[in-house]
Image (cartoon, rainbow, N blue to C red; front, side, top):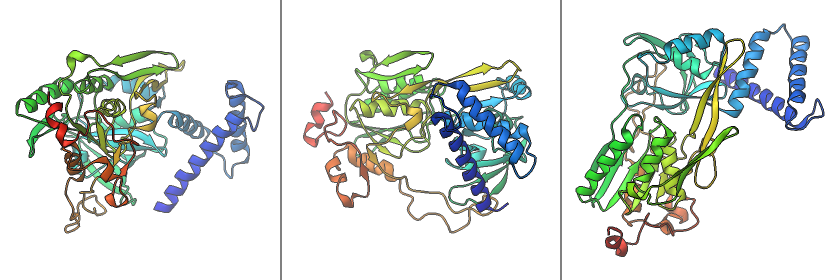
Length: 436
């Protein structure tokens, strides 16, 4: 199957789902309101009937129905899954067991299993799998319309065992087959170091376990070492509970609503900053990229919306929700979001991600890859500078101002309409006062 044909199928399928949903909402086949569930079901039933009677060949109605269910779930929640009774039994049997994995964080995109992020030093990272790649198949099983939870289950297994995957990459959409060996997955620790110019650099790549408390300890160390400016790097921070992001944000916020969680049948829960938990009130810049997700997004959104920090980098992925398993009468199950976390500005983080105030594309440091996914010698990018870190250093120390970055020749996009961000990018003359 050619690459063009594959993407034609994806596009066509998406259009069908969109037309079905639009038809349902606007009642083209029946007269119904947006809340008329039975009217929408009548539309769906009629479409199924037309497919069965008039499609060019006799369709596999089981596959058609399964595709419709997965398309419906993906249209409302890219992290949702439908598991039939057998899949759910296997899922429950294996989900709490300690197994090996290849180190990928997943969501659904275009009907396929998509990569949100890869864990550092994991088999997936060593195979150069990256955010935005699509996993086309796992052990020869196509992921098109595959439940997300089932894909995660297939990728896990005994430590030392291997698994075959086919990947469609953003830079090279020709399918690439590779064999990955499952390992015991470990999440990176928080890293901190002093940079020239009294800049304290705090890199949080995971918020699992006690990483938020670890970040607090590392930040205290930076302040003890004399940091006058702080950069919080949340790139590739895609794991951990959203509430850990609340704890992280509170290290830099003295007051204000950090986030709130709310759903159709989930009571609104507000998370406020606690003054006794704040450690740093001075100059701060946060870095994000398209792999920033979950708790890290909660922290970045709060620090930006509450005018505590500028955010530099790329729009984050968009994943901050509370998920629940809903059992069906036949033993099947639906795993879906029952509540979302909202930024202080009232936007659902899962819907919009976090759009930085200073938008800069991260330099691509990956070489070109051959058909097997291996780096091609001599194709390494010449510009390997960490441009987001450099931009953040210039911004937090006052070497660069937002006014300068708004100039057409700056090469960046500044979204914030005002430079008046308290304690985020102070004038150099006010540096000493901000340390008090």
